[in-house]
Image 1 (tube, one colour):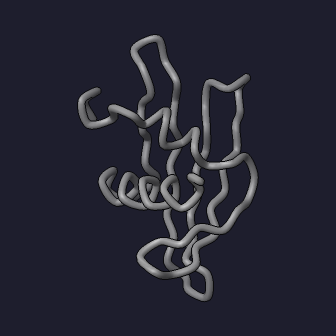
Image 2: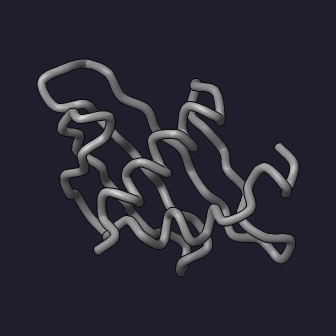
Length: 92
C-alpha cells in the first residue's frame, strides 16, 4: 500500500486509546483494542462488533518512511474504514 493511501494513519491510530474501549461504528457497538509494542514502533489494532463474530485486525508499523498498515487477512480499506470510524468515535 502506498504512502498516499496511509496519510493520517498515525493520527487515526493515535486517536484510539491504549487498551480496550468501546466505539460506535455505523450505529453499532464495537470493542476496539490498541496495543503498542516494540517501544512504540508497532501498534496492533483489533475491532470486534459486540454481540457478533464480525471483526478485523491489523498492525501498524512506524518506519522512517512513515506509518505502514499491515492488515490481517482483510482488505486494507476495510481496516481503514473501521479505524476512521473508531477514531471519530473517540474524539471529543
